[in-house]
Every structure is written in C-alpha cells, then in structure tokens.
Length: 280
Picture (cartoon, rainbow, N blue to C red):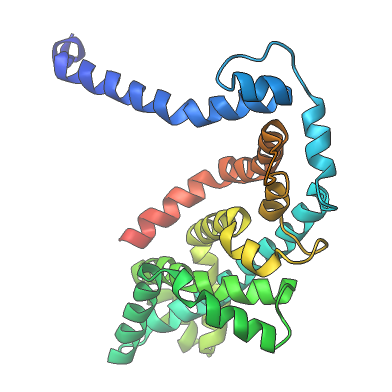
C-alpha cells in the first residue's frame, strides 16, 4: 500500500521518459538488424521497413571481404593489436599507478596531473609527428607499432583508473610484507596486483573496446596495405565512391560487434566495480 501511495504522476512521467529514451537508443540497432538482412535494392529503397525476404548471404559476402581484404584477416590483425595493447596497458599502467600512489612527493602529484591532462587533450593533435616518427623507425603499419601507439595514447586512462584504486587500498599488507623481507617489486606482484583484479578488468574491457572499434587511427596507419588492415578498415572497404553495399556493410558491422558484446556481458560487473573504485 505504501508503494502504491508513493507511485504518483511524477514517477509515471519518469518511467515514460526512460522508456522513450530506451526506444530512441535502440533505433540504430533496429536499423542495423533490418538493413543487414535485406538485399541491396530493398535496403536502398526502404531501409527502415521490416525485410520481406531474409538475405543471409550478406554475412558470407561480408566475411569474404572486399578489395582483397577479408574480415578474417582484419579480425586477426585487430585481435593481435588489441590483445597486445591491453596487456601493455595493464602492465605499464598498474606499475606506474602504484609508484604514483605510494610515493609521497610533489613529483608524484605532478605526474598524476600530467596523465589526467593526457586524457583531456585530443590525441589527433599529434597524429602527424607520430606518423613521421613511426615511419622513421620502421614501425609504420606493423603490429608492434600499433601496440606501441595505443599504449601511449591510452596509458593516461589506464594510470588514472589504477591510481584511484591503489590509493583506496590499505598499506597494512605491504608493510607486513616489507617486515618479512619482501622487496617493493615482490610486494606489488604478490600482494597489490592481485587486489587490483576489478580495476584490471575495467582497464581491459574499456581499452579493448577503444582499440577494437577505433577507425580513424587505424585508417591512417593501416590504410595502405591489404594484409595488415584491421577490422574497421576492412569494413570501410565496402564503402565505394560511386556505390556502397550498405547491407553487406551492416552485416560486417554485426560480425565485428559480436565478440565485443560477448566480452562486455561477461565482464560488466568487473567494469562497474573498477569505475566505482577509481572514483573513490
């Protein structure tokens, strides 16, 4: 009865507003599903209507790719770059954050502010000197160059999340390890880092999504060769100057979204816990 008394016009208005927002949010997914199941003619004629006949061959065409680039090759390149970047960000970010959080010096605060500024400033400002630098050292268009690039671009975000979480950890366990004769490195690897599992999952999911879905950077650094193109660049190859196969493009986008959605649903709890720990 108390709940019924509290349920008034204001609550109803909030619920209706949230439902409308949810409907608007799902419109792009509706368009994606309808267009990827249509033929090219029907997709251009009526993109918002329900498909009259399912064209499952779009997924086969999408997987075969275009311009000599298959989605399988693009997915493999994206997986290598994403996996390598995530591992580097976890390793370097956690160690850097531990040093910043545990050192009681002004330099640590200055370094932390520098990493925060790295999140705010757009990375596109330095795209030209980065391109020239990677070309001069012979890493342009390579997996190692891409991993190095994304590690530098996303390291501020990784350090920011790790630092907030490390500062919330008590020092008692580390001090007990120091008394037992453990070094700083042993205390970090055996005590501190296992306690960072939540924020590690957050860093892995968040940075993995950014690297996997990034298009502009990968188009600039991997747009020249066919064998080293990543998944977003391979999908872009379906878009032509005079003709675009939007039904095949949307089918390719659905294929690219599948592993990302699966990873998010598996690690969503860790993602939320890591964010809340970092905010503290």
